[in-house]
Image 1 (cartoon, rainbow, N blue to C red):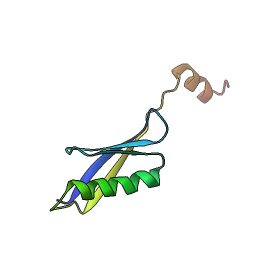
Image 2: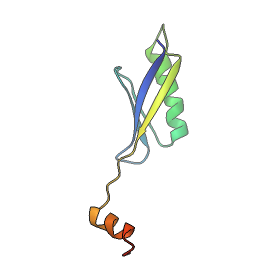
Image 3: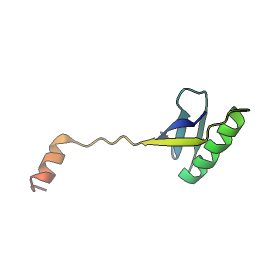
Image 4: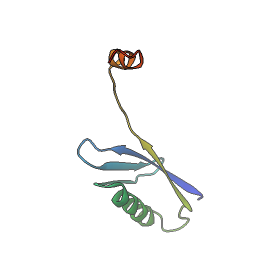
Length: 78
Protein backbone atom coordinates (compact mmCIF):
# COMPACT_ATOMS: atom_id res chain seq x y z
CA UNK A 1 0.00 0.00 0.00
CA UNK A 2 1.35 3.39 -0.94
CA UNK A 3 -0.62 5.74 1.28
CA UNK A 4 -3.47 6.16 3.71
CA UNK A 5 -5.52 9.35 4.02
CA UNK A 6 -6.82 10.82 7.27
CA UNK A 7 -9.47 13.52 7.53
CA UNK A 8 -8.68 15.82 10.46
CA UNK A 9 -11.24 18.14 12.02
CA UNK A 10 -11.48 20.28 15.10
CA UNK A 11 -13.17 18.38 17.90
CA UNK A 12 -16.47 19.65 19.28
CA UNK A 13 -14.57 19.73 22.54
CA UNK A 14 -11.00 21.05 22.50
CA UNK A 15 -8.46 19.32 20.30
CA UNK A 16 -8.59 17.39 17.05
CA UNK A 17 -10.12 14.21 15.62
CA UNK A 18 -8.70 12.07 12.80
CA UNK A 19 -10.50 9.39 10.77
CA UNK A 20 -8.90 7.20 8.10
CA UNK A 21 -10.63 7.10 4.73
CA UNK A 22 -11.63 3.51 3.92
CA UNK A 23 -10.32 2.00 7.14
CA UNK A 24 -11.64 1.64 10.69
CA UNK A 25 -8.99 3.88 12.25
CA UNK A 26 -9.92 6.80 14.51
CA UNK A 27 -7.93 8.80 17.03
CA UNK A 28 -8.08 12.13 18.83
CA UNK A 29 -5.69 14.42 20.69
CA UNK A 30 -5.37 17.84 22.30
CA UNK A 31 -2.63 19.14 20.00
CA UNK A 32 -1.72 18.62 16.35
CA UNK A 33 1.71 17.20 17.25
CA UNK A 34 0.12 14.71 19.63
CA UNK A 35 -2.45 13.79 16.97
CA UNK A 36 0.27 13.06 14.41
CA UNK A 37 2.01 10.74 16.87
CA UNK A 38 -1.27 8.97 17.62
CA UNK A 39 -2.04 8.57 13.92
CA UNK A 40 1.34 6.91 13.32
CA UNK A 41 0.77 4.62 16.31
CA UNK A 42 -2.77 3.74 15.12
CA UNK A 43 -1.56 2.92 11.60
CA UNK A 44 1.22 0.72 13.02
CA UNK A 45 -1.32 -1.14 15.18
CA UNK A 46 -3.85 -1.56 12.35
CA UNK A 47 -1.54 -2.99 9.69
CA UNK A 48 0.50 -6.12 10.38
CA UNK A 49 1.82 -6.32 6.84
CA UNK A 50 1.82 -4.02 3.84
CA UNK A 51 1.87 -0.83 5.92
CA UNK A 52 1.36 2.42 4.01
CA UNK A 53 4.51 4.25 3.00
CA UNK A 54 2.82 7.66 3.33
CA UNK A 55 0.21 9.08 5.67
CA UNK A 56 -1.64 11.98 4.06
CA UNK A 57 -3.49 14.40 6.35
CA UNK A 58 -6.40 16.51 5.11
CA UNK A 59 -7.31 19.16 7.68
CA UNK A 60 -10.85 20.44 7.28
CA UNK A 61 -11.82 23.60 9.13
CA UNK A 62 -15.37 24.80 8.81
CA UNK A 63 -16.04 28.48 9.40
CA UNK A 64 -19.31 30.36 9.25
CA UNK A 65 -19.57 34.10 8.72
CA UNK A 66 -22.60 36.31 8.35
CA UNK A 67 -22.97 37.23 4.66
CA UNK A 68 -24.19 40.75 5.40
CA UNK A 69 -21.17 41.44 7.62
CA UNK A 70 -18.79 40.11 4.99
CA UNK A 71 -20.28 42.42 2.35
CA UNK A 72 -20.08 45.48 4.61
CA UNK A 73 -16.43 44.81 5.44
CA UNK A 74 -15.45 44.67 1.77
CA UNK A 75 -17.55 47.72 0.91
CA UNK A 76 -15.63 49.65 3.55
CA UNK A 77 -18.67 50.27 5.71
CA UNK A 78 -17.16 48.78 8.84
